[in-house]
Length: 250
Image 1 (cartoon, helix red, strand yellow):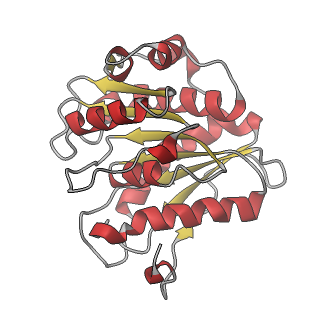
Image 2 (cartoon, rainbow, N blue to C red; image 1 turned 180 degrees about the horizontal axis):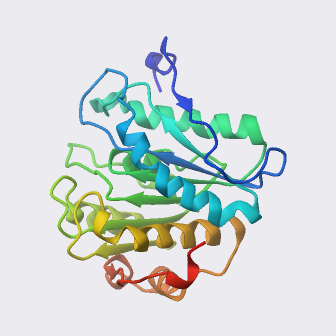
């Protein structure tokens, strides 16, 4: 990935977000925060802190299965064009999980810019699934690659009123992925914006359902299973129902 993959200041994993005790880890989730288009300063930590509630929720849901979670702290606050620094840091983080915990399956959960990073590095052999929340997928001369997602389970959730990351672009991306990988679904969160805050309980339950199903072979909820099985465009424009997952919450 170029000479800038070995910076003087490195990316790091945050402390474990609850979950399985040391020595009992059988799966890992990496949470990738959002960020800026351009920025080489160290991130403030606000974006990472915003993922703590989701991280704790997932850790509680997966504790009995042996799940551990970490938030990835980037070297830089921005994507920074072709450097794609968060994607580099995400790739490092997957390697670090393997170093710490051995051959365990990994789910990448990214928000906005972090979702783009998660989708970009999903080709690592340890990664089995990706959850991309409100993914930032800008129009650029060369569209983001999709072949690295072959063989992975992929879920995208996007608010229909997102003014920062165009939901139509994530739909087009999902269409491209579907051509190389049938195991993708996309949920539309009607009336919600970029942070998906209005439907936070549903987003947490959806992410947990998908993570536990893909990492630990638990049965997926009926809406998720239906979305994965449905042909496009149905499975890529699945509405996220209000109250989704009430019976699934830990």
